[in-house]
Image (cartoon, rainbow, N blue to C red; front, side, top):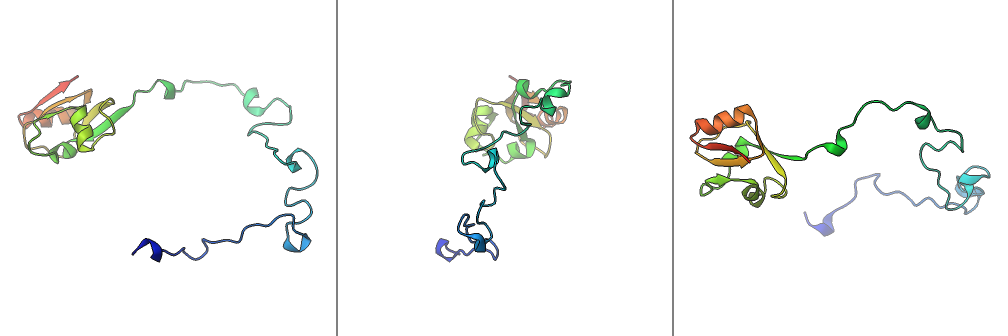
Amino acid sequence: MKLHELKNVPGAIHRKKRVGCGEGGGHGKTSGRGGKGQSARSGSSIRPGFEGGQMPLYRKLPHRGFNNYEFRTEVAVVNLRDLAGLDASVAEVDAVSLAKAGLIRSGEKAVKVLGDGEITRALKVTAAKFSESAKAKIEKAGGQAIVG
């Protein structure tokens, strides 16, 4: 299949809605905006939660609890099966080598190694965190799991 052979699936193409072109088109007179008022004017938009000046519901209700989103630490996850698939010439694995291999996005992010999969060769793995099973499997294969 080539780009010039691509076709839209049935129902993907719609006629453009032509508003304000007479009552016969179904969108005449007020052009689907209802009657008069703020929402009928051009350029009007009312932000979500705005209640016309009345105290909005989200401000009336109490806010409780804590959200950790702002304080979270981003961790790139790598499984042992990914490490087993690395080039045989690689003996030392760290964030930079994982980024070069395309397993994580950048060498700056903290890396956590998880124990999904098996590893057969001895690797010296440097990462911020290891799961217990990953550490055990790496050391069983004769490698080292270094937290750093």
